[in-house]
Image (cartoon, rainbow, N blue to C red):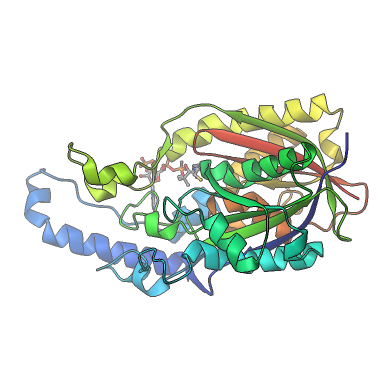
Amino acid sequence: MEEIHISGTGIWHPSESITNDEIVKSYNTYVDNFNIENKKLIERDEISALEHSSSAFIEKASGIKTRYVIDKKNILDINKMMPEVQHEDESRLSIHAIAGIDAAKKAMHEANVCADDIDGVILGTSHAARNYPSVAIEIQNQLGINGYAYDMLVGCSSTTFAINNAYSDIASGLAETILVINPEISTPFVNFAKRDIHFIFGDGCVATIVTKKKRSDNCFKIVDRKLVTKFSNNIRSDWSYLVRAAVDEKNTEDLLFYQNGNSVFKEVCPMVAEFITNQLDKNNILPSEIKKFWLHQANARMVNLIVSKVTNSDSFDETLAPLPIQKYGNLASAGSMFAFNLHNDLNKGEKGLICSFGAGYSVCSIIVEKI
Ligand code: COA
C-alpha cells in the first residue's frame, strides 16, 4: 500500500476577538433588560427570570477564554446579538470562500504545491453558506485549480471526514494531491441570548494539503484512519431550505444550533476514548508512542478526560494535547486541525493522533507519523 501524506496546513481567523468578560457583560445586560421588561410575568410565575452568565463558569466548564469572530460589535450589541453578514450573491465571493482561500494559500505554501499540482478540492463544514454552486467550486475557480471540487457536511467531523475522502481519492488513483478546506463561520448561527451556549463558538478556517508524494519538510504520513457515526439528537440544527415551506410553527431561534451539552459530554467522552484505544490496539501502537493528541476543540475538559483515559494517566499535559480552544473557542470541525497546525513540532518517526467528535454523532481518528 502506498503512503499518503499531510504535506501542509494553513489557518485563517478573523482579526477581532471577544473576551469572556465582554461576552458576559453583553449577555448579562440583555438578561437585566429582559427581567425588567417582563417583571410582571415573572412575578406571576408565568415565565422564569433569566439568570446571569459568568466568566468564571465559562472558563471552568469549557476552558474558553476568548474567541475570534467576524463581527464583534454586532455580536456584543444587545439589540442585535448576532454578526451582520451579506446575503450570498453572485456579484461577490462567499464569506466561506474568502476564509477558505486565505487558509488554502497558506497550506499550499507550506506544502510546496501550486494550483497546477492540485487535482481536487473538498470543502467540509458544519454550516453551508448556500446550497449551490458548491463553495469548493468557487474556490477552485478563484485559485485556478483543475479537476473536481465539492462540498460536504458532517457537523464537527467535516474536516477529518474530508481528509479521509482525500485519502481515499488518492489511494484509488483518482488524484495525487487534494486541497481540503474547512471554513467554520459559526457565529451567525449562535443564539447569543442563550446562557448555556452564548460563549462557545468562534469563527475560523483550516486548510490541509493531502498528497501522494512527500511535498515538504513538515510532512506526516497517514498511518491509519477510523470512522464511526451513531445517531443522536443531542446536537442539532434544524435550519434548512425547507423552512420557507414548513407549515408547522417554529421560531427562527428554535431552528438554530442547540445541544444537550451535558449529555454530549457524558456520552461522547467514553465513546471516543474507547474508539481511540481500539484503534491504537489494532495498529499495535502504545498510547505512550503518541506524542501529540490533536483532538476536537469543543471543551478543554473533554480533551483532558479523553486523553487521560487513553493514556491511563491522572495528570493532564497540555503539551501532549494542545488546547487552542482557550484562545479561539469551539471552531466546530476546524478545531482538531487548528490544533495540528499550531502544534506539530514532532521529530521524524514520532506519531500523533488527530480526532474529531461531534454532531451526528460522528467520530474520525487519524494516526499520523512525521517522516
Ligand atoms: N453561566 C453560569 N452558569 C451557567 C451557564 C453560564 N453561562 N450556563 C449554564 N450554567 C449553569 C447551569 O444552569 C447549571 O446550573 P445548575 O447546576 O444549578 O443546574 C450548571 O451551570 C451546570 O450546567 P451544565 O449544562 O451541566 O454545564 P456543563 O458542566 O455540562 O458545561 C458545556 C456546559 C456546554 C460547556 C459542556 O456541557 C460541554 O462543553 N459539553 C460538550 C458539548 C459538545 O461537545 N458539543 C459538540 C458541539 S461542537
